[in-house]
Image (cartoon, rainbow, N blue to C red; front, side, top):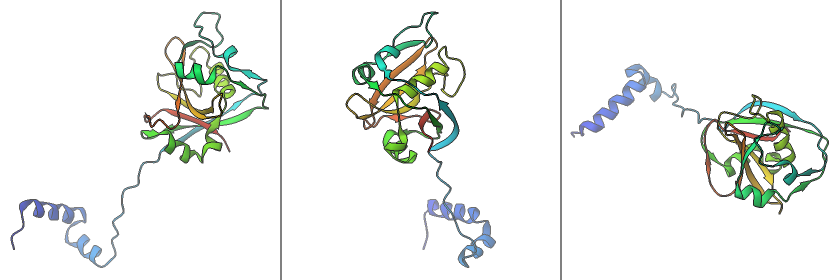
Length: 199
């Protein structure tokens, strides 16, 4: 029986992949096992960062557009979603915390990221924590947050208790802040940072 050249080409490719006759014989005897290449992991641990105790946190008093020289935290943009879903939020005081941050190793949607973090409870952070990290880098200086124009991703409950994706990036003159539904299926790119509970 004559096989098409394409089939012979594939057989030859397998033959070469196995290492020729010796490799084929080892494979047929069960001595050579072919493994699938490992799938790239979703998140790679980068580090942890401490957040100091915060008294009652009133979002509209902190998230204010101001890129002037007097601004302790320069904010250049607040997205409509963020304004609508978060500026009316008031968070109770908390004694401080430690967050972990990880780099996305491949593009992904929020559901997959949240699952990889261990679920909503471990993924969830607060607006106070987000702003505290922004304060540490109020003028775009280096630190845990990316300042190269890439997103820093947080999962925070809005004024109605719905867990949403809060996104911040340094625009060159100030922090750009926005929010999206954690279920809207947007795809976040590799090299973005994801912040979550360190527990």
